[in-house]
Length: 117
Image 1 (cartoon, rainbow, N blue to C red):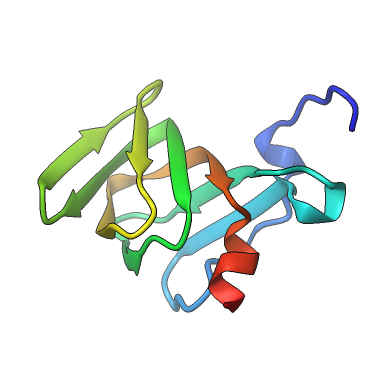
Image 2 (spheres, helix red, strand yellow):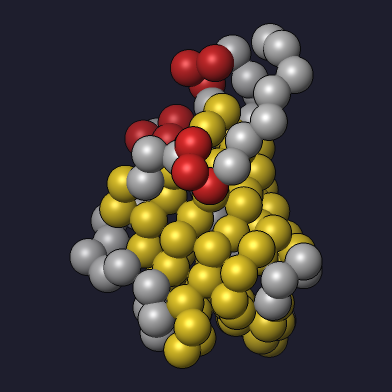
């Protein structure tokens, strides 16, 4: 694998699996590239909610807007330049706010493979 740079415009966004709302994911690096992690961008419309039990360790960097993530331990909110880590096995509710959000993410292992199991 070679050193590469990516922008949001490089992502081919698809509706987040199992979702009907305005929540999209766009991988730019994943198992198809021989990488041990998945790297991509997420796009959340205004006031969207995603509930999920994490099948992977997921790190999100908020690039634009604001997100809140709730779990049994409480709620954290993040804006541009802030990072949220969601550990494997944790049940979370991710909520975008009025302005929506754009994120960058890294998961280990690959989230598509973990969801298929």
